[in-house]
Image (cartoon, rainbow, N blue to C red):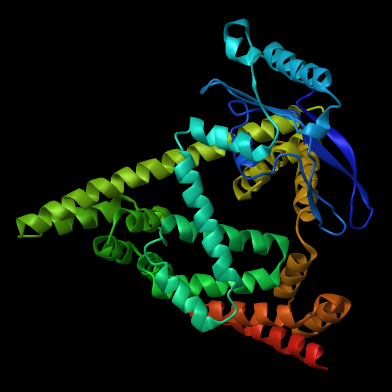
Length: 442
């Protein structure tokens, strides 16, 4: 049984037929991203390349986590006509997994997989194995419901009241939930959701303690971004209110953490007469070193992982199926690794390797474009326009996408760019917004 196969899917909205990968066996040791896909409901998810309608293929699959001895089967009722068919399907899954393992790893738990009729119960079982209790799951659901109430509140006064009343509930996890939903709305090209979520986020940052802490951290980062020097980084690290703020600063200013930086920090330690302050600065030096080493280790691991993925794609008989299967890993790091590999192959005069790598580059770019909503493509085209004439041409060629929501998104983006000091980008956004507004009101 193949772990992944390609199915022919007909879009329920536009009737377009397209191919989509179907995962049958997910092994989190072989593919750590499989767990993330299951927890986020992305297994056997589909996106129509024509109309961007998202859907889900409600098909059975086997989830295997050998470290936790988890063998879980998602088997919806409609996947089989009777009990016998269901048992036969489960048996095929089990045989496939057992055959893929060396003899010493063929454990008894694989012969009695837990079967779930719904993905929600399967996800809860995975979370339970991670030590996440039903109470913790319910707390997360309550936060999601609170966020939904905030998004649906149309009155600014009512939203402020709700946010203030939720101060004890709003924490860093809640703010990450807001950020995640905003990112999803952006990737799906949903301007109205983006506007509402942005409004909620600003109220949370202004009116809750967790929000104010988050904003202070952002202000520290912005100060370093505007003045990226060793002296400024040192000053901000000394001012940082907590370890998380220092982690953010170190991550952004990693290239500044050289011999010269630590020399300046050591001079500050040695030049301080107050023993308590001297100890605080010494502790800071050790903490910065520790954070730096952790970041470097994570970065190396990330690049090694993406290099392994590239190697697997080069050796694969069907790289498209593998690329679709591990799409979440086709990120900026992967593109960087792939670009460097192409350059190295070209410099070495290896035409066959260069051709293979270029074919993978084209495949990756096609898959990324396939999943990019038309509205987001439209906004990117407008942002990349070199002059006013090109802006006019793009707006008129895509007039069906120009509406009041687009104008609002552009206006808010302009305000955000000005707040961050991006005057040139803000002016460009203002020009686009003015022209789009004129088209809407014409």
